[in-house]
Length: 216
Image (cartoon, rainbow, N blue to C red):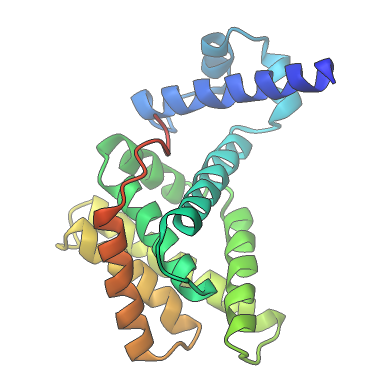
């Protein structure tokens, strides 16, 4: 038990150190040795828990998203279904990333390098599957793959153009494009998409999970 607790604390220390350095320097300028030095652990300790720097990114993204998902469930005074809960979480997730320049830089660098794109597509497929099941829609594995890849590709292109100042929209407009595009790919009714997004943005404005951090 003590060994397990020590391992969990070591892993958390590594992730906390990585998030701090990613926030200060971005993905490209932060090396695994930098993280080891900051965490005051040996390089071998880092690679024991995370084989690659990309694995730390996956941990950070997934933990952040799931913390927001739980926050939405606990905070909303509405009886949310899977679609609305997913949309609320996505709006919060992208908004908290885009509105902080340090977060946005990491997100941009990770997209450009396509860091663990396959892993994130896999997670998207899992969430999309639950939504499609909830809506009683007919689909197969190829459909899930196409939806996930199409969403990821469009979001990557839009964000890169936005970050490089080629796409002249506000961060809120971009978030709406991201989430609306995903819901459209799942063949959800247009009125339902608009109503859900309107509710999601109201929730995002009224509920700010300041205790949940993407990086620091």
